[in-house]
Amino acid sequence: RSPTTITPKKHMLKLVILGDSGVGKTSLMNRYHSQKFTGQYKATIGADFLSKHVSIADPQTGSVRNVTLQIWDTAGQERFQSLGVAFYRGADAVALVYDVGDRRSFDHLENWRSEFLKQVGLEESGANFPFVLLGNKIDRPQDERQVSRQLAEEWCERSGLGREMGGPIPHFETSAKTAENVDAAFLELATLAVIHE
Ligand code: GTP
Ligand code: MG
Image (cartoon, protein in one colour):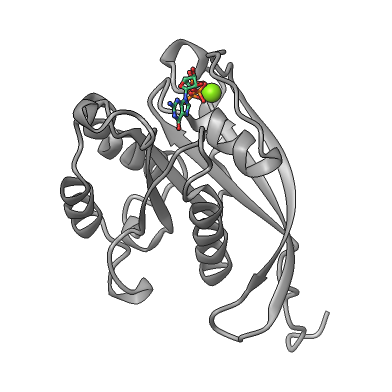
C-alpha cells in the first residue's frame, strides 16, 4: 500500500447497549431490529448481537452511507456479566439505558459509563466517546416516574462529549412497548458512530 491510500470507511458499526438489569435493553434492541415487544422478562446472559442494515446521512460529508449496525445487547445482572467486557471492545458508540420509573438505574449510569471507558482504555479521552442516553418505559404511568427529564439532561451536560463533539450527550425518552422514540434514538447513536469513526 502506498502511504496515500485512503482508508476505506467501515461498513460495520458496533453499537453497545449498557444499563441495569430490567431497564429494557433487550426490549429496545428487539423493537428497533424487528418491531417486536414482549412483556415477559428473560434475563440476558453474557451478551448477544443483532445486525441491521441502514442508510445514514453522514453529517460531515452530506453523503449517504450504507452500513450494517451490529447491535450488542449486554447483561445488566452482574452474575451474567462474566464475559461482559470482551463485548465492549471495538465499540463505535454506546447507548446507556435507565428506566424513568427507577431512580437507582439512573444513579448507576455513571458506573456503566466509567466502567466501559476503563475497559476499553479510554479513561483519559472519555469525554469524546459517543454516548446516547435513553430513559426507557416512558409509557408507564406518570405518577410512577422517578427521574425527571431535567435531571437526566443535567447529567448529559455534566458527562458531555466535550467541545470537539459539540455539547451534551443526546437524551431520548423511549418506550420499547409503544416504539416511541426508539428509531430516533438508534439513528442518533448510529450517526454519532459515523461521525466518530
Ligand atoms: P437484563 O437482560 O437483565 O439486563 O434486562 P434488560 O435491560 O434487557 O430488560 P428487558 O428488555 O428484558 O425488559 C425487562 C422488563 O421490562 C420486561 O418485562 C419488558 O417487557 C419490560 N419493558 C421493557 N421495555 C419496556 C417499556 O418500554 N415499557 C414497559 N411498560 N415495559 C418495558
Ligand atoms: Mg436483556
